[in-house]
Image (cartoon, rainbow, N blue to C red; front, side):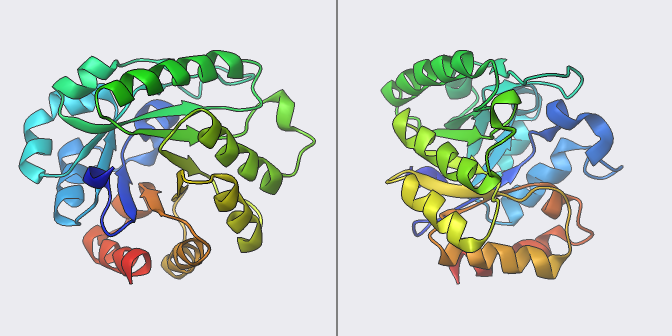
Length: 246
């Protein structure tokens, strides 16, 4: 865990959106992985989240940037409709070969397929811990099973699932108010809770949200588009770091 943390906090630069969103998030600059890898290195992020193809093809750039690699092990596109399922695409052995210091896995609780993802995540957790790699789980409530439940309640459900399956860090989409978020952090027990940055928003709102998450017990951020879509990503990163570490 020390390899993806600094003074008890985590700040990941996420660049795993290509499979989930397609090319719609990118412009002529950030469509180039090398551009984002450079931001991660110069920005002092405690980790860079990549899928295996980019981690493999840009292995030298990641090493040069000296940024810890978090390899995302599963993924899906947005093209198939219905209850989501995201299956394993990369192995623990591949993560180690690529120099990863942690691995990530997405679970959609509430999906008809959640049992498959929970079982796969549990197996990955065992394999990762045997090799000394922490597991970061992305847990998002999606699917037919969550339609009539408050999003703020589902947020705490997600963090509790992370604790139950033995994850080390859980990434969530914050919902509701800061009191709801604080309850989600408490529900996670000793699991570190980090927040997704989500789609691009105004800088002032972003920084206020990050500050609030940290004050309510959050352990950091996994932020992507808000940084590498920004015209001055390193300048924004400096402000984000101040919110996370003071």
